[in-house]
Image (tube, rainbow, N blue to C red; front, side):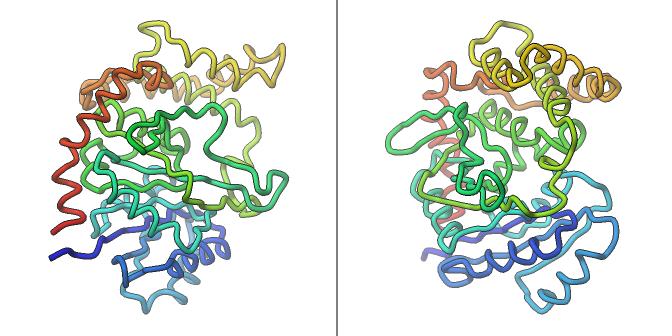
Length: 334
């Protein structure tokens, strides 16, 4: 007897009351919710007062498929990990509180995972809605690389916003990094660790979500000099995954592309960013060294160099069918 698939949708939140409510309502309006699949929504809120909690509880407290948690500590990774640990269902979907799903987004996500047991995590089109980039793709971007294999598109990185995965796999890889990449860079870090552990990540061009440009309190859109944080993250990711041990091809190209908009000041902006976070970089080294010793590593992929070795990637994808067979069976066939 086949059971219905079951998903836990985790909505990491910070303030933005009206948009968070709309994001949740869009999820509840998904086609097939509690009919074709079982679902729950878990809001994890790092707001330091009850300005978001109170309206959420007023609207959704009577629903037995809604829960709210405040970890008590700020951080994107902490929010997401808290939701994952509270989740009851085998499929996790992380959906930021400034995202809006289409009616079929979640159902298509489940169907994609069910169709191909080699997929450990899935992303889709993230499209800007509102603002100067209305209608343009937030993800994937030009620099994102793909490999087509037996009808499935595998992707090098999934950058938060919207991601589906198996709870069992997420736990096995060790969750998002709360120590070093708690406020940003968490998607790049997790994606690299997924591939290194032998868990391929995929992209479905037929699934859409929308990134609401006018949603308030977005860290990525509101902070000054975001390139400083980018420089810090790139430096720490490159150290964590051994990029400085050998010269790669794609990583230097991407680094140049990211900072070339600053023209003659590009090198200075890069160094300035590391300098601005120098104390954090120093503090992070001990933690990263510990993580490197404990990290699952079936494939020695480097940061932003995963798809530079197509032979190794294809081997990872081939072996993933067996690796994920039991997880897939338990999720869809019991």
